[in-house]
Image (cartoon, rainbow, N blue to C red; front, side, top):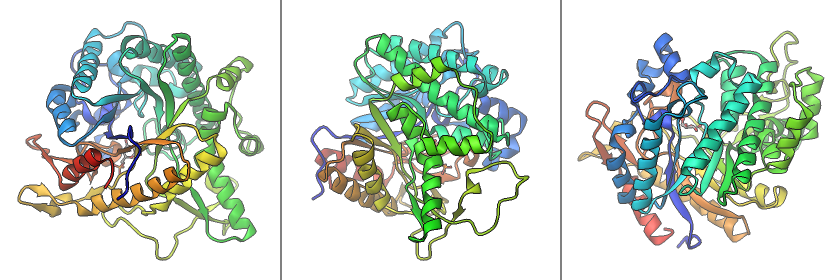
Length: 458
Ligand code: BGP
């Protein structure tokens, strides 16, 4: 039997925009997703937008009941910035305070410890209009939002995250053209990344100044970068991919500084952000004491085959090509590689190179398109998902046995939810959602999950 430590956190994660709905109710302001859907709904799979999220705002009591029924001892949600502060700053929305108080209290009453994240891709629209993360003022507004949340909810919430997958709003929003404001502007991307690291540090600074005693960290999507071969240029490609994909946020968050080799590349391409000495000091002095890791798939790279186009906007891929390894295991329903050992390699990296900081898996999961084909007598028979979890947990367990300081495992996600551009295309839940009726039904994996947490292993 694979047994986890006694107090291990088992649960799942979700985010405000993906679950709450009620986007125009009780004084919530618009965020970039609301605005973008209103103006360009064709960008979203089947034209389904965030206003069709899974109604957690109305159904939170029932949903928290399901958390209990599926054996959760903890759950991550995010607080919507534009619900708390409709304009992004100024007067706090009392209705939002009431809602999050109710949710947190209900969770605690049901024995589910709340883990709360403050930013999951959801910039308030009014702040986007003044430049979003490109604007230093927005960093300060975020600091005030974070401080307000700590003051109001910090007596009960003891695990905080400042950001979820910060690289996503940087790359999707500022150089890949995938998420609003879909810019392709490498210099802006670097400024946004830097401001994000700063905003996180600013929140941690307030947390410490308030004398709060919980854990505060950042959730980073880590993808170990594997070279095609041991050939010198393949190794270099993997090293540089790792600088951009992993170390870019890991190093400032944990070590309080940016990796020199990464800064050198940024300088070489004339992309350095505007940064003041005072702000760099804030980053230096306010590092995380807890790390969240989202792991889905590895990154395999090789040396570049062709010279980069000198006129193309700079992308990290200037330095490497993606490598498709023959024989890799693929999730046929989503198209992502499955490589369970990646979770072990991440754990060992944190143990050996990041002071073995306390951390947990904050997302790991398997998306399935067309999951209704696995419906038998009204229940999704998702054995593939159970196996996915077991295989990852086995490697995680091995890492813990070898000294990794991992204290929990949250899956993505609880109830099938709306997901950014993909809407409801890929289902990840332990609980399925009928889009027409909003009916929730526990999947086979949800039942299995209860067993897992009751036995502290499998
Ligand atoms: C992660 C995000 C989640 C969720 C998940 C699934 O990167 O943190 O918010 O969206 O990916 O993504 P998708 O539905 O695109 O497969």
